Image (tube, rainbow, N blue to C red; front, side, top):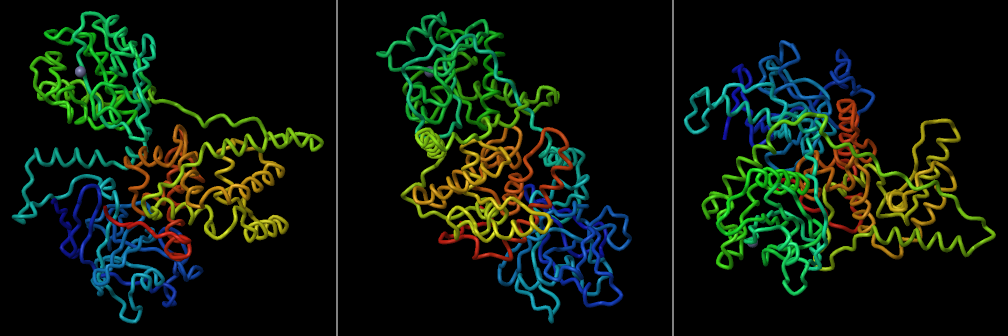
Length: 581
Ligand SMILES: [Zn+2]
């Protein structure tokens, strides 16, 4: 564990960097006295009025970097307003997240506090405003990314500052790796290498929902690609691989990635198989090595396969004593030789910089033609249309597993908080919000769409986006129709699985992987709030900082709604354990 010590002894607390979280332990929290003090304007540094919003949820941390003498020297780096800070009551364990709205308390504060909370936030955490203080832990998820440069690094065990140049270099690399801008910066994508031809092998089966997390490297023990292709085309052989890399670097594909090829026994359903044309004594040719590395890089990036899971056939679990493959492809017939090839050819390539121009640009899927309801005189075509739309919806529904008791994930809760708070309590259309929005529209005030998650799912599944009243009514009708067919949770999950989160980001998993590099169901509250905010602000190709700001603001709003309405969002479902993993 590394401890980043305060530079000013007046700041008694220590800031620890644990993983990519910034953790401040055992600090005293007080509450804003803004509204009670006549000399205080009640306006925060982020421009929010605490007087006008007595119910405001928020917190303030003494941050360095504002050139404000009272907080300069604080070990907490300058964090953007709206950053979600997780605060844990040390006595009761109660945990809430609050957006950062102000700077303070100062190092001269007599309370010795290290965080200020708004009165509402303070009471929510179980604090009594009469006592004025509680002891808390403060966590800024992914906060390490905001550290400008490594401060003094202290060896935790010995407690003495000990920074070797190598250590400093290593740490600055870690810090750079967590650079927040890098998280949001368009991720490099590697183009799929050219496939000479796709010759589909009959020897393949469904992956049955298993996701790809392994690449198995083979050697054909045949002198030419042709022989292997014929062998894989032969039903009787009962073997296949996804790709064959020829000696000259040409790549053939024989099984689609989404299907399971028959090449590595029990590992088939989770892996991609790559054959290399070589006899049992041949090594990879240079062209072959290059082409194969490119293919592996692309596969690893496309499916999020850990580099450690790229292995030679006989080193794949369950295949140990069944084969000599990949023989001498990588020199020695050891797992170490394969790993070395992977680390020089794949790991380095994945870690290296690539020009921005090679970023893949994927736009939103083209909307289907505007909805044109057929003439009312012809009910048969009308019914056919309805039937085809219901089928489209059905194809997008993800049935709930019967076995496990369903619990709502953080992302599901946040989506409900932002998009449709009464989701579990209305039948697909929300009469209350329709009335509210209609009144707003009639009185010329700002009004929203009043569309429910059910309607958004129907819209996504059917692909109609025309902003017409007919479309809205038809959408509402479909949303009503699906209520009896599917469970509410099925509708919610199906919606998240197909929703648009930004360029090239279809579905919550894609979005969560891109932004936070984890699956959507593993997101913490703060991360989930950001992903759900992307439903309203899809990630654009350009103008990322402005987008991030807006999405961040909406994410903070989601957390506020969630905190204030806890227990009224989840309907009949349990809430999955939200903090930690
Ligand atoms: Zn093999």
